[in-house]
Length: 112
Length: 113
Image (cartoon, each protein chain N blue to C red):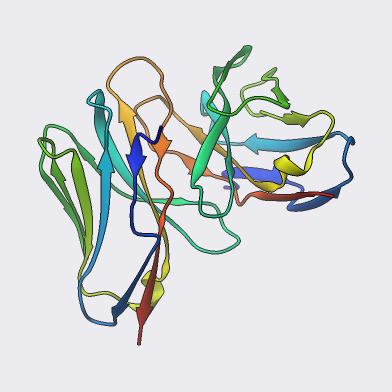
């Protein structure tokens, strides 16, 4: 049982490049989330989805886009990468809004 | 504006003693609180939770206390073990809609053998 799988684990981007952080879960969870963790700053919500075809902005959505075409996948797209997007990105899923989250192991992104 | 505050960035405790991690919140709509534990290079994992209808929840060595009037919760670990060394995040959820969890900044616990 893989749970939540994030790829890649590490990535270095140049300023202005774009990339997609992949997230897949095999638990048939309806709810999925993207958080970023900056040093000493805790976890901040970027985007979330309550089901296929539905996405909502979180606290820090600027510079990111998401899509949710299937229940399993919730990719996070970075367009025109900036140094401020250097962070560790965590994807999570939950069975419902009142359930605990299962997190992936994270993607460490550096923008230079 | 931080809704969930963990004011102690770090805490060191001797093995076998009690670890107390604190968390304060400002949103009176929060009705469910969780603690997550995070090791380096891993995602956070769920540790223990408490509903606002309770003031205490216990699971083995871990106990969470909730003081609603003070908008304060704490996580007690007794006895502390070296394997408990990790970052602990406090999180909270509102009692309506599909609002996601709000996390604090975390407290790094070091248990010294």
